[in-house]
Length: 147
Image (tube, rainbow, N blue to C red; front, side, top):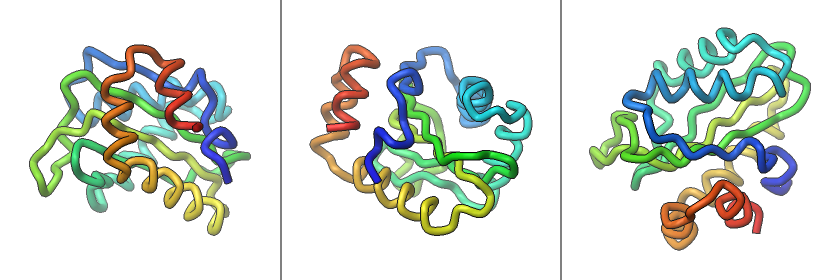
């Protein structure tokens, strides 16, 4: 699996006016809903419910909120570079400014895990994270993520 299999250039966002995790997840759900063909409130509720089970923060300013969505046909991802970051209750107390949201069909066991691992590999790479933080456009971010 390549990141480009689950993430399109139009699903890379640069957000400036987001002050909370809840607000961020809602913004991502609103953006994802039309492509997913799923109501934005359903997406938000499922991802928030998963987040409430335990923070999906990876640390060092990165988070990976995710959920399995009934009726979703294909795994899809969104990426947001969040100016100033948002609090994901990280053990390192660092706000998350690099956020992937992964949405997978309800029955996508192996594909969901493979996508999580692929995204986690990107987020854990300090060099890539530095490049993402310094990127000036969504096109540049997409190029870094799919390289």
